[in-house]
Length: 138
Image (tube, rainbow, N blue to C red; front, top):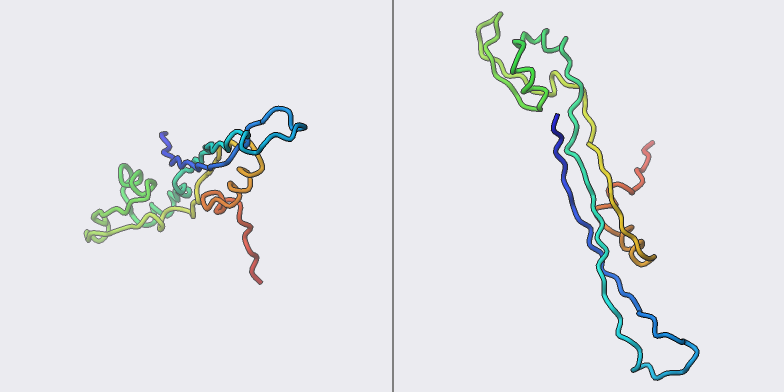
């Protein structure tokens, strides 16, 4: 089964002070090499929400014909069909025959060469949705 996923990059700019050699001599600051700006790229991979388990007993109870309609419902799509007991067109929503699913899965590939990048990663809105502590109610 093919699973699609999203990829989002988290680019972080950071500065590096190149070594000026022997720090013990009191060289003029104008002799110091310039600060270099670099990029640290990290990536966030996420899947779409995962559907819940298909409840075949519920589908049978709703008179849904076996076959392609089951697959459409499993895929999160509504279906229309003639109800065999009433001969009227009936619409069934996926939530009527699926258990509650999950929000999906996320994984990150992080490149963190220094503490400045770590701080900026922690502030990233993309990562905060995974690291934020959920507040308890009651």
